[in-house]
Length: 357
Image (tube, rainbow, N blue to C red; front, side, top):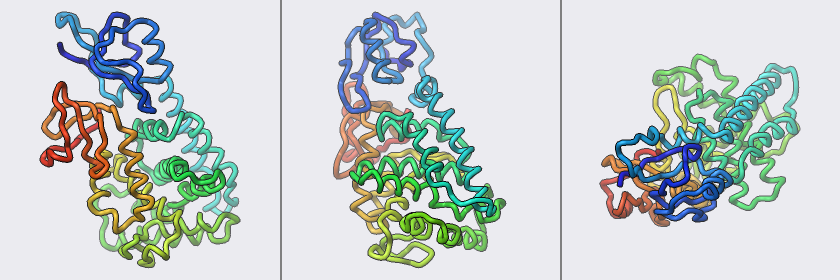
């Protein structure tokens, strides 16, 4: 029988589930081939399951129009509430940044962190926050939007690293302020849709020093200032502005460097669409272990790919399937179940995941 993907609010008693249904914590709640009843549908809503695969057992009847994972996510009241809070927070953060950079005020640290807390309270856990961010990737990626995303990723990252509450607080703030120097770069360069000239790129690269200078006299933790200065440094000495090597780079700057690149690559840009998270993970695996601190990079990549376990993906050959197992030695290449076929992408090197659907 043909399987079709539906939103949870379209589920009806009597429909048969075409694939195992898991919670965000990887708990199986409804096995494949189970016939839904009202109790099970209530359970789906309780666990905030956005959609599921069901069998279309009556081909002549069009049950629903098949929808993508992102469409299912965006249709939920939970996402709509998260999105409203996100937009309000961006506006407030932008106002705070501008008032400080115009010399009208100092950074109100408690107020800035209260803004990020508003969003964090909308999420159930770290994976859920990242899932929500994935749903808003079509927003214009202005500097303060990117800064907010990096701040939220850093908060989740700090939890994964089991940092103290105070260190997570400082890391979250450092993520929010890491790109403050870009506010001091001419807007026509920051927002340019075409490729930057060599001279324009040189100007862009001054943002880390400008950011440090904007923060150096503020009454904030030194690690926040270092993050603004060092988040483009790389452990192999290939970064800027100073070409520091690993032992010269502050740990918070190393963490923010990873979050910064991940968000930039998985976000829509004026000159390209968002890159699939699995492609980003593969890029990190291929070139990242010399540039980024392995202590942080391995943890980050493992947690990122785990957050996509049991998601439906589209492979490079057009087939669709469910991510069912992560390969520890090749994180970007999990095992995907396509119907009755199991595709181990760590062995099928000509195939790859092209899209989360």
